[in-house]
Amino acid sequence: MRCEIRHTTEYRYPKPAWDSFNQVRLHPSQEARQTVRSFHLHVTPDAEVTSHKDYFGAIVHHVHVHEHHQHLLIEAQALVDTHAVPDPVATPFAALWPERGQYTEFLVSSPRVPAGSWPELFGVTRPTGTDDLPSFLVNLNSSLSRQFTYDTKATTVNTLLVEFATHQRGVCQDFTHAMLGIARQLGIPARYVSGYLYSGGEMVGAEATHAWVECFIPGYGWLGLDPTNNCLAREKHIKIGHGREYSDVSPVRGTYYGGGQGHMDVAVHVYGREQ
Image 1: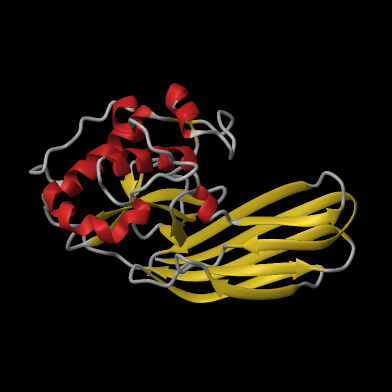
Image 2 (image 1 turned 90 degrees about the horizontal axis):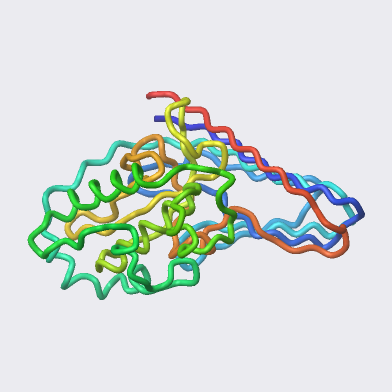
């Protein structure tokens, strides 16, 4: 599928701001399941823009606006081809044991996904070593999707996982953190993915950057699962990057002097067509 993405972030300030510095993670990743054909970052007013690759391999742009301004526009445009990938074959859960040491960073706790009895809190039965890992993950993805309620007003970006566990209403970020907590407590390396979703009106979460999970399967690699939409991450999912949790891949964050209490608006449009 060929996907055209336009992502705009606008800041408006009641008073002039200056020395605005923003860290921007909006460049889609280049990997087997997708090819980035083009990417452009436009900033108004004029800005100093540099870039580097972060610890997890994502391209990060640094946007520095020196002059006084009351309006800042950061617009990212990308053209990406996504490709079909094969499904994993049956793999016993015990195949993970000798390989987990390579992926410790996706097994240990993090600030937004702390250690806890997440399988029990979310009613998940722990698998045995002979259970099929891919089937377990697909079933877990499906059961969490049915169990959770998508509600954009129920949580904020700072809602703790333990809070979400009590009412189980939230957005893709919450669904993803919950599945990460469960998977890691079961010894499955799991990472947070930030990206875009071509919905076509069929799925939820396409109005902004989307989030889903990638879990490691021996002999296969990383399998993307979207608990918000009860599906695997296939051609309609466009990946930006991955990390341990949301904080590692937040799309835009920054600081500035002056300006007063600013207001931010974000708009995401993804257009797709079959090739």
